[in-house]
Amino acid sequence: MNLRVKEPNSWTQIREELLRRINERVWQPGETIPGEADLAEEFGCARTTVNRALRDLAETGLVIRKRKAGTRVAVNPPHKATLTIPIIREEVEARGAEHRHVLTLKEIRPLPPHLHAAFPVPPGADALYTETLHYADDRPFLYEERYTNLEAVPEMSVAPMDKISLNEWLVQNAPYTTGDMTFFAISADTALARFFECPVGTALYVVERITWNSDLPITHVRMTYAPGYRMRTRI
Amino acid sequence: MNLRVKEPNSWTQIREELLRRINERVWQPGETIPGEADLAEEFGCARTTVNRALRDLAETGLVIRKRKAGTRVAVNPPHKATLTIPIIREEVEARGAEHRHVLTLKEIRPLPPHLHAAFPVPPGADALYTETLHYADDRPFLYEERYTNLEAVPEMSVAPMDKISLNEWLVQNAPYTTGDMTFFAISADTALARFFECPVGTALYVVERITWNSDLPITHVRMTYAPGYRMRTRI
DNA sequence: TAGTGGTCTAGACCACGTG
DNA sequence: ACGTGGTCTAGACCACTAC
Image (cartoon, rainbow over all chains, first blue to last red; front, top):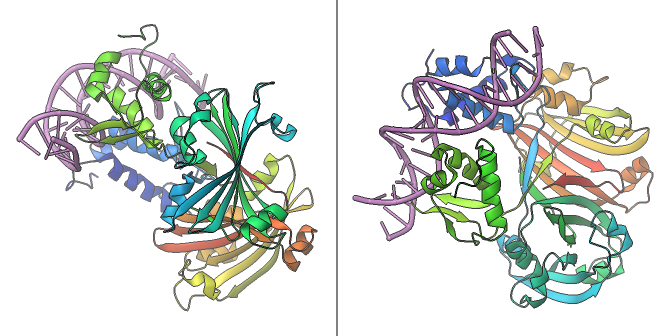
């Protein structure tokens, strides 16, 4: 049954073959597939190699593995999309435009109440609030409102925000371990309408992100994109 | 230097230790870290185990590995968010509501021109167009417009769309290998406003998805969510 | 061309969870 | 209890690529 003799066995080839059997319904959804040892014998390789292939399929959710129970083909394969969070400058430049940003506001202010739950900065500690306008070839591209926990990033006060944007500076200097992202739509208010040069009420795409380093909240940012913006990803 | 003697070495523990050194800037961004062999000696384990830990960090983009050049800490760690694409019924039920759907339109119709580029159904082959209304506890939740390539899923004509939604049926019966997703905001037109019982012009969150099985286009779906909807994900 | 990561092996022991 | 996947090892060879 050893079908692959020409090429040296590789775990990716085994994965592709297993994928084929799943996609072509050789193994039905919900069905238990042969054990690692059996597959290793069939493919003429070590069990470790089969394990690597199956682990990869399990990571994408296509199969479900349990000790003793074996490996089953997922019934409702939980498809996942991975979206890369770009630095704004790179996102603009990837569209072939030149990026420019203007810091229009930078002040210490208390965290607004509606953020207290989601972004628990220690009481008494104020946050740095910033508003940044991002342009692509001088066209308005993104409106950024950000609260940053100065206790988490004390060096930020002296960061050079002329050349590098706050966005980029934080990525490079304030590593985070976890975060929450929220995506939704809003209607442009007068301020946003003025910036984007669009009618009040225009539908705008918004991304909110909160990041943490372990248990320390770093920053809360709300990014409102220009009318017509589309976020894309491949599955 | 062998710090971890109490517990049997595990690749996750090594990964956490490496992560710590990166986050605490023991290894600076851009810096080349010791080779696998050195680390294996330091941790008192096999090189394979260190490899596993480093591969995991490389997958998340925290380090960049190159043969001969070694492993470097990423300068701009490209953070990635993974968002799970739920079945609509499960998404509604996860909110503690009861899901109900109504198929309001089902007809063969030619693919609209603006989709030809993104969704290249073979010329002459018509697509099945469906409109489905999804409710959460009888409140409008989602408006679904879908084109399905019948050549890819011929069995669909006889699928029982009463109990199970098209959405769910496709997930279970039409496996896909790749896809594109797009997220954006639109203003409610009169039809959407009537369904969602909201003013015309209300900002709505939209997800478009195209899925393929190898080179065969499967379905193009546009899902418009109720006002106020937020999509969430953890990083 | 030499050094580094990528992969593979054969074998072993362990951890989990089903029966 | 026992079968299955999870992990680890020591060693080997290979592939890529920087020098």
